[in-house]
Image (cartoon, rainbow, N blue to C red; front, side, top):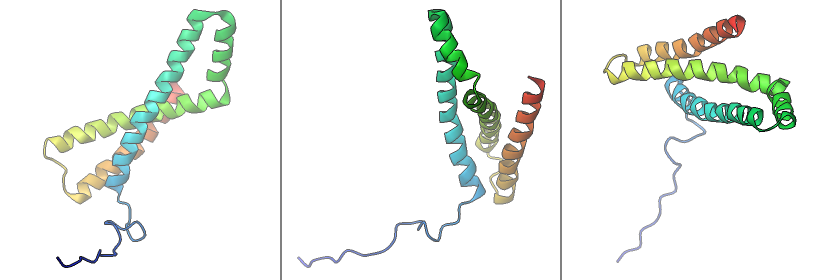
Length: 127
């Protein structure tokens, strides 16, 4: 048999020439926020378990949760909840077979991003 010569070509899409699109970024962001919410939930569960364990352990957990790091994690979690919720509504709209053209999909993507930021600011101001 004749030997085949392997073709030396870049993987598709080539990362040096590929321009990320808003629809792909919002899809990736939805997955990231979903996983980040798991981390925030674990932080809150740890805080609640510490409250049921002992006063000293709760004081340590409460110091972490109420520190600047805890405030940052919980504030970003509020944004992640809103973003993930709006992206889920967008996905349901797509499942209905609507909004599949590129201009509408991009408008819905910007709606998820801007809407989640606005809803997060409102939530943080009210709470």
